[in-house]
Image (cartoon, rainbow, N blue to C red):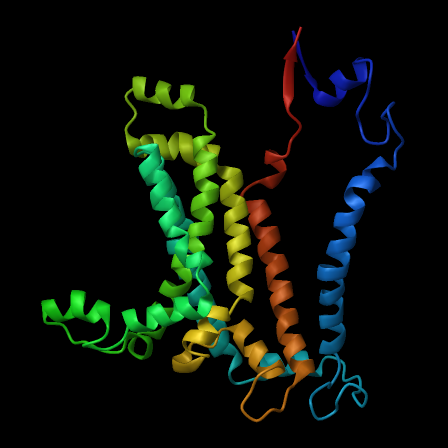
Length: 324
């Protein structure tokens, strides 16, 4: 008895489906399937990134227009590292991304998925459907709802239900606790994405494995630690990576809620203000592209780090099939 890989078994069979060696086609068949996707990625993802880096080495702005700009080398990049506000924007971004990701986009999403898969199926489905409402609600309506929830008494629901009955001081939460406000607003949206992914992964775990753990006397925490978490490692990696990149580059909810006021201007919102929207109308496109370029580099670093942390190379190893 020995172990053979899928390629070895395929090579012994009448037809081989290994790319480049298929007897049913030629070695360029993959272009038919991958070509359209590669074209879209190149045009809408890779090309814009290249343009961002090119513009970051110029002094292009509303003063120079699109025709009178000149090359200035790394001046915009040097300006970022010497700018007095850079450290503040880094700090805000780190706090916002870390707490939103850990406590909501991954943490709360995982808790919700586990809870809703351990209750009657209809009830779990209804709960998940309700949790998706913030994601499908227009962002302006969603933010206005949060403004009323966090408003000062007697209008704010949080103050009237939680703080006033306990004799605590009431205040307008967006201005009094801006970091908590932006984390809550984004967290409740982000949790729904991970919840759906994790729920699908948990429900695909073999029922025999789950039942065997019950027979062995495993409690719910042991099942989560030794069965559920290891079995959904791939979805965990995907959600963590995707949501990290999303939080680093997104600013829509923060822009509508505070527009960067009260010290909530994250790095991506800073780049938007510099390049497309500021009070004086002096758009610094070159400097804004350098800010965006920093985000691209950081995103690539995070992707590589996550692939190493989750041991991506182990997860994509070729399966072994036991044969006689």
